[in-house]
Structure formats: C-alpha cells, structure tokens
Amino acid sequence: MNNFSGFRLQQHGLSHIFFKDGRYIQNEKNYASGVSKYILAKNEYTFSAMSYADNTHDILSFLKPFPVKKQLPMFSFTNPDTIFPDTLLAAQEEQLLGDLSLYISEKYKDIDSHTIHYYRTRDKEWVYDYISSEIKSVDYFTYGLLINFRIIKKKTVYDSLSITIQSDENGLFSYDKNFYIEKIEKEITKLHRIADAAIPTTGVNTILLTPQAASVFVHEIFGHLMEYDNYITQNIYQKNDSVILNENISITDYANSAFGQACPTPVYFDSEGTKARDAKLFSNGRLCEQMNNRYYSERDILEPTGNARSSLYSSSPLIRMRNTALEVNPEMERDLSQIDSAIVVEDVSHGFVDKNGVIELGVNFAYQIHNTEKRYLRNFAITGKIDELLNSIAASGNDFAWSISNCGKNGKSMFVSQGAPSLLLKGNIVGI
Figure: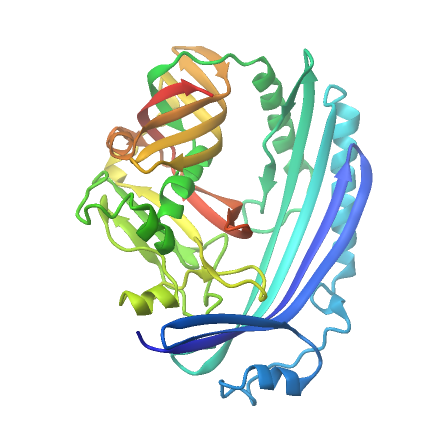
C-alpha cells in the first residue's frame, strides 16, 4: 500500500435559537477551530488534531511533513463573531421564531406543547490536496428550522416527527412567516390524524412511498450499506457483483451538483483533501462502486470518491454519504395521484437491512385509499427481501425531491441529503 498524508484546518461556527410554547429559551453560539492531520506509513494509519491558537510555530511544527508555510492561512479567533458577523440577520432569525411560536400557542390550544429549534452552521475549511500539493479552501453553510409538536389524547402521548425546513423553493432561507405557517398547519392536522389512526391489517399490500418516505428508504437501505467500510463487513450487496436489483433503478451519491442544480449538501473536497466526485452505486440495477476514503482506495486499489467526512476537525473522518439519489427509468413514470387503491406512506421513522437482505421500514404516518375513501394508519412496518421489494416497483412519480437529515454513524453526526421520486410497489405490512 502506498504511503499518504494530509491535513485539514477548520473554522467552525454553530448558532442555535430555541423557543418553547411561545417563550424564548435560548440563543447560543458555539465555536471551534483547529487543525488535524492523518498519515499512513508502513500500513499504519494515524490521526491527530490540535486546537487552533494564534501561535504560528505550534501549527507549523504540527504540520511539519507538509510544505505549507507560505500557503497556510493564519486567522485570529479572538473574535468568534467573525464567522457569523451579521447581527441584523441574527435579530431577524429570533424575531421569526418568536412570531411562529406565538402563532402556534395562540391558535392551537389543543397542542399540549411545541418546540422550535433554528440552527445555522458555517465551516471555513482548508484541506491539503495531495494531488496538486496545494491547499484548497471551501466555505460551507447549512441552516434549517426544526419544529416538534405534542398532543395528549386519552392519556396517550403523541409526538410529531420534526418538520425540517432547510430552504424555500429558491434554495434560500425564508423570513416570510406565511411560508412556515402553511407547513405547520399541515403537520398539526397530520398529528391529530395519527392520534385517531387505526392499526392496519397485516399482509401484502400495494404501497405508495411519497418522495419523503422514499428518500429515507434510499438512505437507510442503500446509502449506509454502500459506504465501503459497511459494504465489506455487512456483506449484503457484494455476494454477487453482477446482481441486478431492478434494471429500471439507478442510485448515485452526488458530490455537489445533480440535474443541473447545486445539491443540498455540496462537497467539493472531502475532509481528507480528496476532490469529490459523483459515485455511481447502481446503474440500471447493476452494482457499480461504493463510497470510499483514501485508506480503502489505496488498500483495495479503488478510484477515490471523496466521501471521507467529519463535521469537526477533531474527529477522524468517516465514510459518509453526501447527496444520495434514487432515479427511475422515465418510462416508469406515471401520474400516481390517480391511484385508487394503495397504502400511501408519508413518514418513515427508521429502516434497516438484516444479514439475509430483509428490509424493515418503520412507518410513522400513512393512509389507506380505496376508491374515494381514506383511512389513516400508524405504527406498522413494511418488510420484504430487497430484490423482491425493488422488483415489485410498478411505477414512479415525476416528483423527485431532496430531503436533508442529520445522520449518525459511530456516535458522530453529519448533515447528508437523500432524494427520490414517489414509488409504487408491493410490500408486506406487519405490526410494530
């Protein structure tokens, strides 16, 4: 295996604002800055990190293996507001959350409690590009609004899944209160329906996964298992490299742009300094490649994909998804709004695949349609073998949509995005 080394310097800021039941709770900012390095020599991988200080000698000593003296950015962190300098913007954010929380408290007396959490992160990073022996700089922003509701009916507590709103239709954070009110009202209506919903009849059913539910399906069932460290240990998809899951399905982990637009969580250089590229996981149902990092690409002679990621310089990068999308052959597209008999799944709470390739998707909210009748359902799971579920896909909608999640792996969290269109398939319904 070839020796390699690299480093990452990061200036990280995280801003939080919390409201609960119409009351202001907290507005805090967290900062971290530092530098980390990794070295593979004599087949041994080492990772180390140090907090950043205004001491050029310490930093240069730490980065002694790298010819970076003239390129190294030396910023001061004595004034942490440099990473979030816009105080007017912070005031707008706080005003918006206060207005929304007050609106919920005054209009929805039947909501027992609610919380609103706004977050904004900024990461200014400099990574050592080992190909050009140059330092590459990137500047990432992430922001979103998470809203949760709770109602108590017949002494039973019902909690909503978080409404997670990253941006408006133009890809920008909106300060228009009405933009959020429409989504809030929809979620509160859904929560009441969950409380009154029935447990479905078990057995094989026609199931329609909405884009939100289908994207969780992609993330949990394909994304994690195609991260190379999971791929080689869990042995789900590698039993036969020519296996065809469904010839109408392709899955790609996009680096920073897809379909002519920027992705929700763009990555240009990963945390090891590898230039990020799209990773084609499945093409027309056929297994192609996996997301990897520098260690595995060197060890197993793979083309690097740039999927080594960590949210903080002090954490060793893990192989993580970026923007994982399921695409279906356009010939499979149809108007799924006209389906007259199916279980429509809107919210998926969890998903996993066991060692035998059997899927379980936990469903938080769904409804069953039959002709013009609609019956709300909750607390069940969709199960089935991967190949059977995928080969049962009869149609997809022309409604591809992205969603963003704060994904956990090995106790560490990272923002990733996943996307899919609506999917019409057959699955087995079981109670949970």
